[in-house]
Image (cartoon, rainbow, N blue to C red; front, side, top):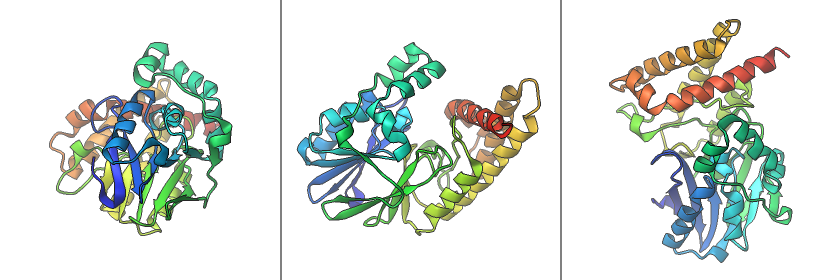
Length: 310
């Protein structure tokens, strides 16, 4: 757990090490969590709080970038342990934290009950009196430190990124893509957009990435995974990859098994991009590290294609 600018990176333990991060920001003895991981992650978050020397009563905020369960599944359970905290979430996501039943049912329909129990545990509702709808431009105070919320659709319509002026960095959730440390090379971090279903919007995602860069940030804190720099180059890579993924989807749109065609083409695209980035065996890296992302991105592109036809 590092602590530059009072920012502690917490490995939530979801799926595998160094895959899913939450963050604890500590300022003058007060704390704010950004994202929570799943229900199973809560003991790790509380242990990080203890390690940072802050009491549970000292936490003012739990801030969610969006309500996908790898980011927000543990929010309700965490709030039970933080008596003075309020939960800040995009207005479109607030109802899903107050009553997570529909969100949970949708995820169960995709993954099945057995996997949901193993991966996510269960969802705990949040008292509506403790929920703050974080509109675009909302500023959250943390012991004199300001955390500003920006509406950043593209990955999801209920997505915010959080600007921390003190560290000149963003907590980006999934808006600035994925960047696994195992894929770092001499060229720097590898960047991959995530089109997880069901609200991928390429035009909005392009605009959100540009909006983040307009603040001239020093770093981004990604959920998947950790702190990254070299942001202008990474943003360029993300823009190119979004366009290439859209081209893949459109090329296979009318095929009888479009899903299989898109998945195969994405795997090839990512292998080529990894090789260009300096990863020794791009195909093997896709197979061992990006297999789930290929499938989720394929699903997201399939949903996007269906929405275009309406």
